[in-house]
Length: 415
Image 1: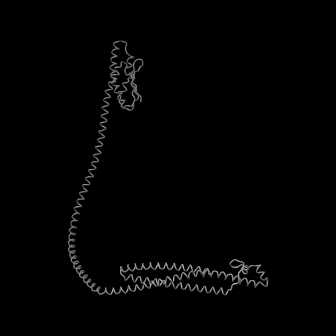
Image 2: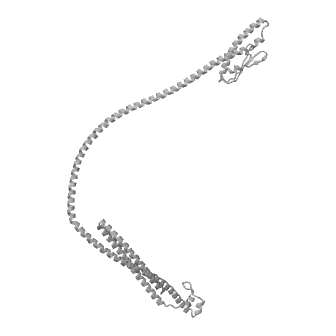
Image 3: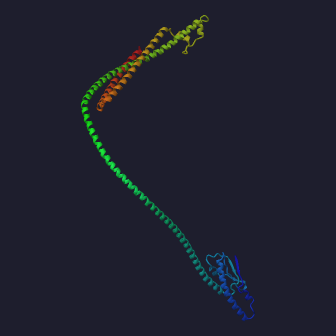
């Protein structure tokens, strides 16, 4: 905004009278008015500076339209006042003393404004402190209300606890009475238990006496029975050893029979091949005789018949010698009978082995049930020792038999 303050005695100088005395009077009046106007101007400048953002430019006008801007005047305005323009026209039309008066006035006014600003800041701080105090007072009042509520609740709880304590005391009295009754019953039970224990001890003593009397006669009988059992077990072990020996012999014979069976099977395969060839020869002869009227043997040679093995029948007829079919059949029947007999023997041996194993299991069960721990350990040791010995003997026999069989088998093959 731009504010213009005009007309501070400028027109008086232009419209002055002609006489000197009158001029002097007019000058004095102008000086007085200037002083008054300077005071009013300072007041207006300060008020304008406190108003909305306005910059100030103070102009001191003189005769001839010249203007002087005092530098010190601008620095005397309040610090927080933004600068706009205020043009002062014809503020002083005389010496610079008028501007000095204005500067002094503005200095005093600035001090007053600074004090007023400090007072305003203090009042603001006081207001803020008052607000804080009021908030704290409100908070304390709320805390007091909470404390009062808690106190009331505590009183109510105390009343409830007193009532509960009365009830609890009554229950405690009842429990004490029950405990007394239970103690009396417990004492009676202890006395009864003592009596029962005494009766048990007496009965146990009597039982021990009777057992001693009974066992005194039974020990002799048990010893005799054990001796008999030991004798029987030793006899069974001897039988077992004999059976094991027989078993070794049977196994050796079995191996020899298996080898013989393998040789027989190879011979059967050879004989089967011969049978096939003889059948092929028969078929060829039958075909040659049936076709002899038409073409004879030449026709058979012209139309060769192939055998089941894939060879030429005619070539086989002339290359292979004649074989007696009835002798081949007899040999086959004899081989089959031998094989059936061997299989029956094998089954009988397996059945015998199964029966022997079952017998051994039964004997072991009887021995384990009737013998003591010490006797069992001793027998197990003896049994293991005998088994090891038997295994060694068995291995040696098997080696000897294998060696003999290998030598005998080689001779049979060469023959």
